[in-house]
Every structure is written in C-alpha cells, then in structure tokens.
Length: 538
Image (cartoon, rainbow, N blue to C red):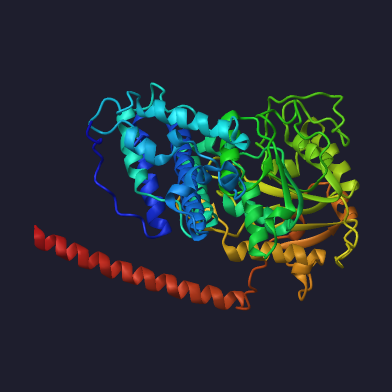
C-alpha cells in the first residue's frame, strides 16, 4: 500500500513567537467544530503527546550514541536501546511504539483518506496512544485526555493538525531544553484558552503578573508549597521559575495541590509533567472542603487564587478549620482563608487572591472573623490590585498575605508583630488591550521590594522602609481596630499626593479667562471662514 499523502511541509519555526503562532494556527483548525473548552483538551493533549514523543526520540538517539561510543555495533545494540530505566531515570517518559509520533503521523487518517492504513480513525489511534502512555508511566495515570474519537471532533481536521504538528519538534539541546520550550508554549496556550473561554477561563488560569506578585513577596526558595485550588498549576510553575532565576535547586521544593474539576486537574498534571515538577495533586480531583487530600500537611508556603464568592459550597459548621468563626453559607471566601491558615507550618506564610469585598464585608459574620484574624496577628500584608487584571471577571481583587510568625527571623528580618503593611497598587499596570491590564516587571519589583524592606528580609537589604503616601503604610493593630478592622489599603495609605499649586487664585483666574476669550476669538474667525466657503458653493 502506498504511503499516505501529507500536507505540504511547513517551515520549521525559528523563534518562540513563530512557534507559538504555528501552534495556535493548529488550534484554529478545530475552532469551527467545537467550543473552546473542548478544543482546549484536544490541543493541549496533542501538544503534550508530541512533546513526550520528541523527548523520547531524542533520548533514544542519545542512548544509541552512548552505546556506539562504547564500541558496540548497531546489531549489538539490540534491546539495550529499549531499556525503560534508561528513559525514566533521565526524567523522560516511556513511549510505547504505537504511541510515538512517527507511528501516528504515518498511520493516522490523512486529508484525502477516510481511514488510515491501520483501518482505524485518527481519533482511535490517538486515544490508544494516550491510554498506552498512561499505562507505561504511573505518574500520568488518569491525566491524559481520551476524547479524540468523539463525534464532535472533525477527524479530517484532526488529520491536518497531526500533519502540522509533525513539522514542529520540541527538542533542542537535551530534554531540559525541550521541556523549557514546551513549558512556555503550554503556558501560552493556557492563557489563550482562558481568554477564549471568558469567565469560565478563570477557573483554571491566573494571570502571570498576579502569580508573580505572590511569588515575589513570599519568596518560596524551598520547602513545602501548597495550593488548595491549583487550577492548571500556574502557582507551582512560577515557583519553579523563581527558584531557577535565583540560582536555587527546584528539587528543594515539594509541591502539594488539589483541584475539584476533573479536566482542570488533568491540565495541572500535564503542566507539572512538562515542567519536570514532581507534585502531589492527589490521586484524583476532589472538593477541598469536602475531601481534603492533604489533611496532615503543614506547608511552608501557600499560594492560592480561590474562586471568588462561591455561594454553594461544602459547609459543615463543626469543621475544625473554623478556628476564627464559621463562614457564612452564602460565601466561601473566609472558608478558603481559614483552610489555608490551617495548613501553615510554624513559620509558614501564605498569599491568597481574593475579591476586594473580603477586606470590608460584615455580612454573615465575616467582619467578626476578619477581626479575629487581625487580633491573632496573622495578617502580614494587604495589597489592592488594579482593575482588569482578570479578563474572566470585572470584580476588583486584592491579595491577602498571612504569616504564622512575624517575629525577627533567623536571617535577621525585622520584628513586625502587631503590624500590617498596606500597599495600594491600584494605579499600577498597563493595558495589554482594551479589556485586560497587566503589571510590568517594574511594578512587581516595586511591590516586592516594598514588602521586603518592611520585613527586613535579605531581598530588602540596603533599603530602609518608610511609609509612602498613596502607596504604602505600616499600620498597628490598634489603628486597624479603630478602623473597625477594615483592611482596605487606601484607608491607611491615603490618596496619592498631588502637586501643590503655587499660583495665586486671582492670577490663575485672569490667565484662564484670557485663554478662554482667545479660544472664543478663534472660534468666531473659523465660523466666518466656513460660512464664506459655504456661500461660494451655492
């Protein structure tokens, strides 16, 4: 039987932008036949499959080269090149032969064919590949999508997509390079899909600039890192980047997470696998309030962006986590906060993204819970963020930072017992487009440095904290109590100071009156000219 026909080869992308554009073009091939939530699973699953196959092929060639260098011939290499430990021991997934991309590209249904040479549709082949990879790699169990033969998926377009991806290799100088490359592509896709899904996209994606604020303030260099509503795993990925950027060892951080949505949990598992992060996300997706997958965990750092203002949640009044008051049935905000605090180790700290209303609400006893949190000296910093950071919601957001111990630390940090730092960052950021704002590197650095100079950490060495009108203020617990435990930063930082106008009022009135009359004169002259031109046309 002659080989299947393929679409014309596409030039191999030479830059990251070209690669992202090429792969997003691949996503567009299925856009017309299904909604964003469906094709997200298909595209991310295929990209992951392409990556593990490319990384496998690259490792296979490395093993071959090593054996040849040891003096073996091609005939002698034999089964040695198929030793699974040689792959798994190098953080490369074992890919069975029928799951390798070369096999799929050669046997999948093409543009002009009803079925491939195997007699199976493209979707059937890919589903079988996903199942065999999960069976061969225990860390991927239950992770990969098996949806490619669904009625809603256009098999012809799926074949075209295979052809396009065949010309894109996720390899470079070793599997680490491949991982970095696909990791960036995967994050790019998550962002694009979150935008495409609108409000629902916020369920699995937190804007990177918001995540970076949490990471830069908390500085999770090592220890146990936890996210009780981890979405697609962005908090963990950004933690890894932070450690790498500061010359640390990512192996020093242990990742724990939980996610209630099955598809989102699967995305998170793939995201961590792509980035080489060994994380414990539980054996399945589960509601954090109903079934805590890490009941005995005491985390050094908690980073979280819980869903805002949930009205229907698994509430039990006798839950031991409610040490500061039972959260109201109609809003889970303070349930998330108390759950997170219950997870903190002796010197643990946390950053939690919340709706702005959480800083001042008194409904359902929330004001009393907030007062107890303040009096327990658990709140270390409150940051009000700009609007429009989340494309998925117009609700203004803030970040709560908690610390179990605000005394002077072992590294010489300043004793901040009985104090809370307030930062008003609402005027920061720049517009990415008409609908979305992002924080710049300079914005994030200023927020982080303000906190670390206040706390006296190593990152703040060489800078001395002082209050900045309209931006930062260190308040005592007594001041917060006098404000009825309202934690809105602007209440403490005050407005941004305006420039003092030294021009005497009478002189200003004369100057502005003169300017106004000059504008009147210009307007009158223009009116005469226009009337004259109109008369000439009649």
